[in-house]
Each structure stands twice: as C-alpha cells, then as structure tokens.
Image 1 (spheres, rainbow, N blue to C red):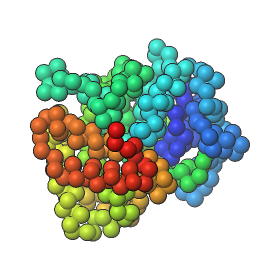
Image 2 (image 1 turned 90 degrees about the vertical axis):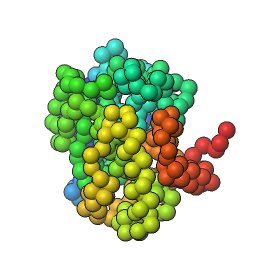
Image 3 (image 1 turned 45 degrees about the horizontal axis):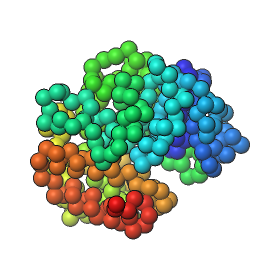
Length: 330
C-alpha cells in the first residue's frame, strides 16, 4: 500500500517504521530537524533494546510525495489546522485519512443522530473556524485509537515502550471494507490491530481513562504512580472521570467500568511519564483542547455541570500559558 505519515514524532515514527519494514511504500511529511535526521540517517526505531533503521522518502512538500492510498496523521492537536492545508497534495478521491491522535477528534459530533441534543456538529474547542473539517472531509476519515507508549528522544529516533494496539473504525460506526483492509495492513506490520464497529465509543473510553492523568502529570511534574498514590489527587481524578462518564452517556458512549477499575489498570503499567508531561518537559505545546477542552465544551452544551473538569482545564491551561505552551487568551 502507498502510505504517507504526517508527523514523524513518537507515534508517527513508530507506525512509519513498522509499515516500511513490512514492505509498504512509506513516505513522510516532515520538517526541520526531523526531516534532516531522516534524510541523513533514515528513520531509527529502538524496540527491545535493538535499533533498526528504515529508509523512507521524507519531504516538507506534499507535492513531492504525491497522492496516497492511506494518510496517517500523527500530529499534536494544535498543529492539525495548518497541516490539513499543507497535506492536500497527498489526498485523492479514494485516499483514506487516519488520524492517530489523542483526545476528541474534530469530527466526533458530525456522526451523531439527527435527533441529538447537539444540533451544532462543530467543536469550537478543536476546529473553531472549520479549517480542519474543510481540509479533511468526513467521508475520507477513518477513526483510530492508539493504545501504546513510545517516545522520540531526538529527531528521527523513536523508542517503543509497551503496547502495540491500534483500533480503527468508521466514524459513523458499523463494519466496512476499508476498515478491514487498514486493519490487515497494520496487523501485517506487527500491531495488534482491531476493526471496531463503534470507534466513537473506543475514542471516548480511552479519553475517559487519560484525560485526567495527562494534565495532572503536566501540572505537577509527577509520574503516574505518584499521582495514583496521592489520596486527594486520586479522589479529584475520580470525580472528574464521573463527570466525563455522564457526558459519555448523553452522547451514546456509556462507560460501564468504574473509575477505580480504570485506575487499577493504569497502576499495572508501573511508573511512567505521560505524553503530556513529556511535552511539558520538552517545551512543546500541550494538547489540552482535545483532551479536556472538548469534553468541557460538550458538557456545557448539554447543560451538564462539570466543576472538576472546569478546574482541571483552568489550572492546567493557566500553567501552560505562563510557560508559553498554550495560546494566550484572545
């Protein structure tokens, strides 16, 4: 398959490296130090203490890469609006666009039933001016949920941590031939890939589990085990998860698991630094809108009280603004 990866950070680099090693025609839209490193050294992947290198065609100009069968978008949320415009040369009428990103995607409300209380399908916190939706049409999008850890300690180098699960599915739900095909391609690259018939639920379930740990870690600088061990923080996170679960029930994504059960799963992973904490330490923009802002927006529009979500967003956003990691208020 002819595949382009937009964004060769940790997740994008891992997906690109594995797909290239599996024999697919993989290219990448990259820039700056990452582009220079990949052109000089190839894309380097460290897994199980073994380093491999794969050669991929990388460019900062989508026109040099041409039309693709599959475009994997592995960017941080704040970069997507600008990238959507820059990747247009990659997209043909049949190109599948698969965002492998954290949090609530821009299209999340677009597939709700007509009778939904959320008549306005736009998420202002994610796509305020509609640029993303205009650049990446819903009919070409395939949803994706990433369940794995990896890091990019330097440009062009990816270090795989644990997990290799990728879930793909149609935004509107149900089975499809293209979801099955992409699932098979990912499975052939040694991912534990699944085709879901309800990708919206899968997205919300992951969000419900990490929308607290990520910002709390960025706010405090603490690894996961220290966060879980603090009784006051633990209780705050549970209340926040309860609010998100109530919102999920109203939008067709009910969560059956308890917050305590979900935290027990996180504890089994041991001590780790979340992706948002890694971004904060590296001085990169934080993905607060997709992880917390969109959840609050949906709750407000449904007239559901979200005091703990409000506090989490407000505190973390203020910290990020003071450090130049989130846009200042207009």
